[in-house]
Length: 315
Image 1 (cartoon, rainbow, N blue to C red):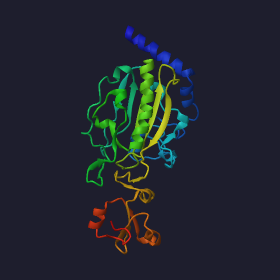
Image 2 (cartoon, helix red, strand yellow):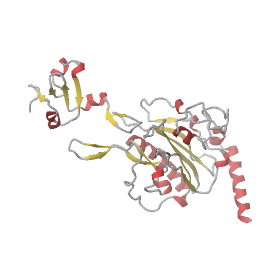
Image 3 (spheres, one colour):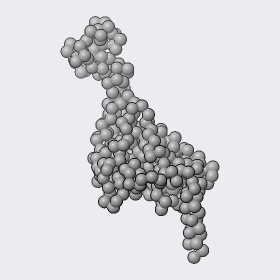
Image 4 (cartoon, helix red, strand yellow):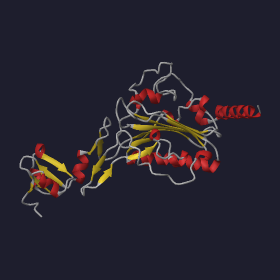
């Protein structure tokens, strides 16, 4: 009985704090039927199954409208909903926990939710996670023939926050850009929890469009509990992109972009004459655009493909 009374008092205290806290108060004001203000309970599974903005989950809650996220241009972080997370008051808690959505029919991760406290943060080093192969994962071979990973295994709930190692429900294929930007927010949360011993309600939702195997990005939300969001409060979408590369999100395959090829090309091929040139060869300027192909292949690879060096580009 005493334990129940204690939890009741704690719940009332949190409700009182958030009724005056700036972050939470701003986050839940306004028209709750708007597609921008969505129920966090439903948008992950709805997006994963292909629903788009304007539809509801069948219980009256609007679906997260991914179409409101602008196309990636230069910044890989987009602030969502005025930086106010979508948590509802009945989700507030100061009890640490973790929840990971089961993989869907395509083997993709869903939302991961946790209340981060010091009692679930790890004390030791992270173990190997190489046994997990997330959807959309692909490798490539460098010029020396060595196998390389293009993607990183990106934790939804970071190891430093909850101590999860090779949990397939918590790992997606993420670019270096995505993973490094996520780490900035993760470190902010970890530092806050360690410094205050407070709790942070935390959720990361990978956004898969339709049947795509690679997430287009992740939605990261966090709200500190004991201080009403004064310490931690954010809601951001991070694009799963990598500069200089074009990515097919349906499969996860990737290739260097044409602009990057021009900047980093080792040679320029003339598909008509079957000659290859150094990028700064004067003959490249005279080449028809329709016959010009930039490549990062080695000289040996190009010769095997049936090309020979032009007279000016011989060793």
